[in-house]
Length: 158
Ligand SMILES: [Fe+2]
Ligand SMILES: [Fe+2]
Image: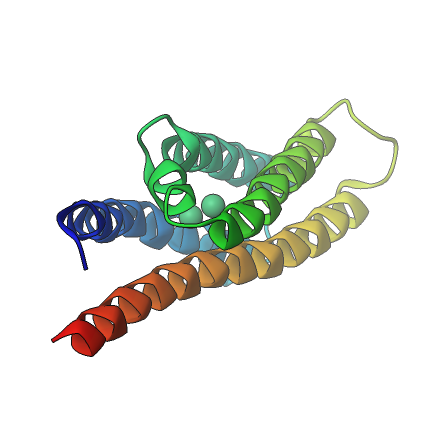
């Protein structure tokens, strides 16, 4: 591995560790949202959805920011750039879903009973949590693959 690759890989691992703190916080919020001890009211759901929306906006922006995690991964190879495009599209799609759910949770939005609305929001949040979990898994796998690739490259040279 040359010096530039070494620096790049160290930075990717470092950025991923920082982002992993976000991942833990997001998963805690998702757990709170979809695994309630008692059924949540639409007001509680609206608050939790809003909180999750803010966290996702911050997290995705950090991943995509210039000089951030996606930039460094994209610099490694064109294969990774293709995977990043998929991940970026997933960011857009998940932000759209959480926006819709948060709007839907507002008291004046829709004529269904609050029980039916709470159920609908709960289903929507559960579906989103699966997509989110799969998305974060892809990011972890991508980092692990990069680390393994560079380590095997280093062993081959040694
Ligand atoms: Fe992401
Ligand atoms: Fe992430």
